[in-house]
Amino acid sequence: MDLRIKNKKTKIFFTILFILYIVLLLGVVTLRFWNPDQLLQMREALDNGTAAPNFKPFATLINQIQNITTGYALWNIAANTICFIPFGFILPLVSLQKTGVIITTLWGMLFSVIIEFLQYAFNLGLFDVDDIILNTVGVLIGYILILIFWKLRYRNKTVGR
Image (cartoon, rainbow, N blue to C red):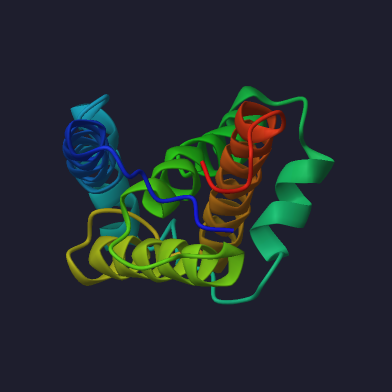
């Protein structure tokens, strides 16, 4: 199903919205715009060895699910998933080529890997493979939401629209 926006003005609007979303997401995730003190704490923890990257899939996630009653565990799972829903929702709308669920999900995963690598390379946070998993789930949820929206919007219209 081709989810791309055909109206030029609407497409420009959503493209600008997508670019702003990407810039904001990069700022929040890598530069911690929402909490600059956390960036300093993270660098300190990395320097003194109290924090380490996680390359083992589901290690952090299982620990957080076991401790879901703690605010941080719930926040981390929710934030890593919810923050990537717009990626899966908007990318298929503004893409130059028809973008299905697999391509959209792979682009979202690649973007997440880039963010995790930037955090690791520049000491801006911890590389955590589980963040990539949660981010990718968020992209997939976003794609499913736009697909549902699109089907509901055009369920009573002709195929030629």
